[in-house]
Length: 240
Image 1: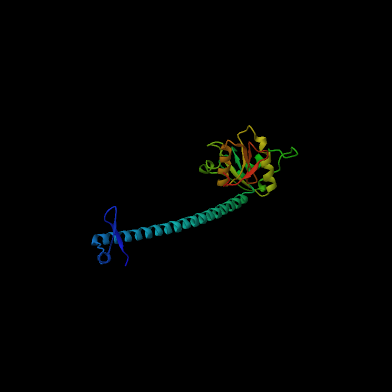
Image 2: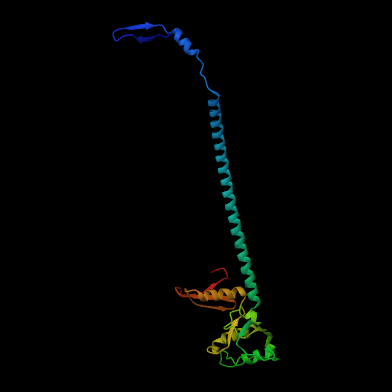
């Protein structure tokens, strides 16, 4: 048994046997109250719950982010597929109008055949050799006035301008007619391609842009010359 020394005075030290004192100390119980136990348990449970909630929250947030990213990728893929399908549908619709033209401002009278009116008008146009374009009613598959409600959505030169949609049997004649439209400059009559609704909207939007010097259509394709570029470029319905 170890011995403890106690200094009784500044000049001498006496050896003290503390065996009994140490025994008494070792036999003393450490008392913990019920409230202290409850507090310890409550803190442990609280810490465990907080850690569990934090881990669960982080897990859900991570999974939610993964789902959002997957959803955004899928939506992007579907939007891309939809745009591609709409482009193809618009191109097919425009191709089906390849032989069509719209003639604005050409007066019609009640009871007159639109084919006769159009054929007579076309013969007044000059071809490449400065000769009148040959055209008879037999060259025209169909011709009919465009209803007023459709004119306002179709790039009408004015709200009251009349319009005749013409479908030619031969595309060569159709192309010759639209090439001759410059001869109508300054008159009340104009010739346009029969564009789809989406292409009409695209053409009109391009004409409003400050960076566009000019916009037009040719063979159903929408073209525009930008101010900072030397050559015109083709635009599609989702390009602006």
